Amino acid sequence: MKKSLFLLAACFLLSASVFAQTQPKMSKDEQQLRALLNGTAEGWNRGDLPKYLSVYTPDATEMRSTGPAGGVEAIEETMKKGFWKTGRPIQNLRYENIVVRMLGKEGALVTGQYILSGADRPDRTGWFTSVWKKTKDGWKMIHDHS
Image (cartoon, helix red, strand yellow):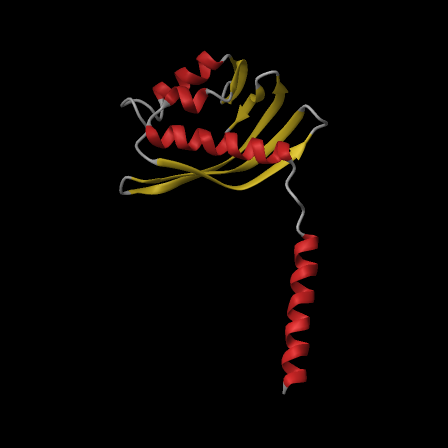
């Protein structure tokens, strides 16, 4: 009985060790990008539009049905005419299925799913792609396709 328990424990420890080694470690840059993205959701959920927009470069572009539009002011205007009509969004924002692909040392492509939920409304979901660059002020988004 003791041998069986010992073998079972050894197998468990070995499999846990192998599993831990196969999980890729997040780089510092990926951790920073994920934190910044989550910070936009925190700003959104507090109704803090400047916090939500703080990750964009001044000349960032967003994809619209008419094509790319430039400048963080254009992105702010889109938000104010859409989700922020009442001064703050009605539903809460969260991100899932985030994938960060580094494009060299100073660029990243971030994809994932956004979910708007709450306020007794059905969830609204969609996929996004954003392009980021490392600046003297840290990582900033230069393009948003949501």
